[in-house]
Image (cartoon, rainbow, N blue to C red; front, side, top):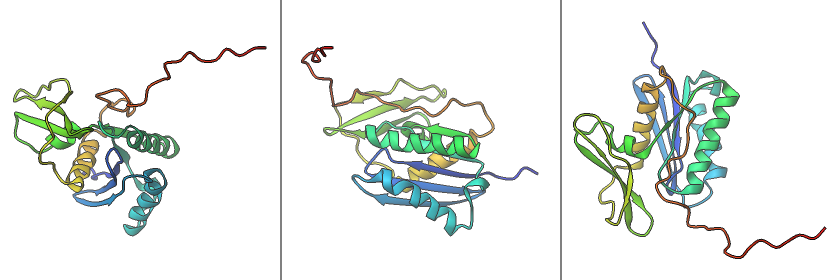
Amino acid sequence: MQLKPALLAFDTSAAHCAAALLLGDRIVTRVDDMAKGQAEHLMPMLEEMLATEGLTWRELDGIGVGVGPGNFTGIRIALSAARGLALGLGKPAIGVNGFDARAHGETLPFTATIPAPRDQSYTQAFRADGTTSDPVQSTEPAGAQKAPSVLISAVAKIAASRLATDHPRPAPLYIRSADAAPPRDPAPVLLS
């Protein structure tokens, strides 16, 4: 009999710190709304979730992480934490994108939408044959969304289902370029 995994998943790609602790058939979620400060908040939040369940980091079988699309800084916070934990614990880190989390459990065909800046959205179509379209940015608003607790639960379940497979190191999913741009003026010349 194979034991079901213990997996900790988290996401900071939106205005929150969201985490799910998957323990066999049971899942514990926590979503702390916050527009900023996720970097300082994430690790103590995860440690508290583990302590509440009487677990240590070493008892985890893997780490799941939301890879976006979403807030650039938020995505990097979660990815850095996941990669660091995976390296330190010797456990796999598995990235799950927001489209897969939204499509989890849905009947196909299904179009996943994620809120984007300026009342726009990111979309990806999940076809009945199991294939997907390339994700794109749309000028349409995202519409109704699943609760962050439902989405982080999906990230944990998807990551757990991928534990026994080969998977690449988690990488950010960006649909658009950053709002910040390099300066237009040439860099100053340094004299020796």
